[in-house]
Image 1: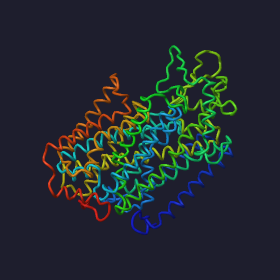
Image 2: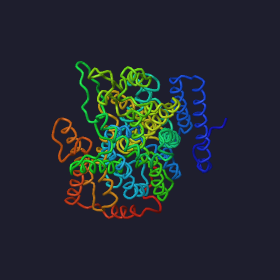
Image 3: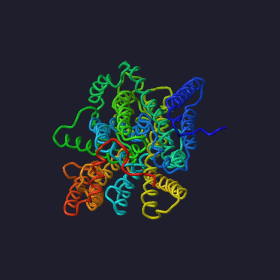
Image 4: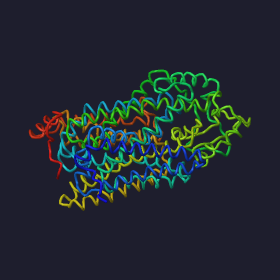
Length: 612
């Protein structure tokens, strides 16, 4: 049988047909599982089949996309059409944090967590206006490649690699954490084993084909994850009589929750039982839609949204996706498509959190558990399953035999995955959501691991250590680095140092501290020079890191800038140091300044040849 080609005009022309068939096949598999569930197929087997089927498809695409060509490995041959690059970018972007943890954050943290949605969506405005078309015009392989070429010097490139590594590695541990959470529940295995299972799937997709394999698997993963995210929300909205457009009609559900919060006593501290503790779990104490009052609360919302926006425009694995389009114009169009595909999920997340919470609180619904006998709650299968892997707990603190709101402990990261069970939906929906969550975490982890390995293999190994290395040796080094970095990420994730959203916020703050201003000023300020860029990266990352450690060690945050917002401190230090150092040192030569002028024209041929 002839090998399927994942390149060339005939392939790109047939992409709608190929992914149309793929979507139809996936829906047919979903229907088959639904039928088999009616015939008695167990929930555990359905969960395993969903995970196994989807990972097998991704692995199949990854293996078929294998390549030994440098441009195909690093930038997918620069042949990805804008719509499909938009889907791949959306999958790359909508990580375990977006799919698995975002609605959980809104569920537990209420209004304040909407800052994540505002920031993550708004960040693409910065990407579209300040970054993507101009970096594509430059014609580089990686973000450090742009910084190293724009400012010149191996030291500049080296520090860009360091910042990229710190931010991306922090981010990838969160994604592996998400895969471990999903695998633990779907396969009934310990979380510490689940992270390695997830890593294996991630590596199969990215190791052989690099960016080309990651791109086509990410498109497939986007289709799975968006179906998995939207279907339960539409189902709950219709079942609870809120209508067929949940994104526009969940306001009535919010009003109902605000009434019930007074009844069940949301805000009471977690019950304390001597000799028992639930590490990593918490009770619901924050009101769902009531913003905190005062200037400080408003500042904390704005500063968190700002960190997420600026961090979005600084993340190397997102920016490098726009290196894969055929032209500068296609890169601009691709950003618009990315925003559209991302919007579909973010616009739905608050509705999901609302309907999910209502299922547990509203005594008029058969799925409510608050106010019910604890013996009945403990008999529920989903309570037993999630409790067994340490992500949910029930404690009768006042010994009255009735479950109170401050006696129900859970991990915020499980909300999306457990919502079909909260809502009493068929288990086939749970299997679908698990497959979607796995797709989201895997797609982002693939992009992150590739960004790290490419930077180390191309910018550090090839550009600095061994510029004469042959193509075969360069790609071998890149693949070995993928294995090593992935294993390191799995080890760190298994330690459970922080939740998924917390780790992601740190990654954004690291990226904006060290990379945002060297990238932006590299395009928009001709006077920015090598010394200034080095100062911006070193001082920004150093100050941001120091502030994070100081706050985590007990220092009072400056004007409310806690550990989720340390990027504001780091980026400010980066901007000041970069401007001051650039102004007190010689300006870049005329050739560099002409090159910057040319980069700011977002059309025409690329500035440099990226084939070296």
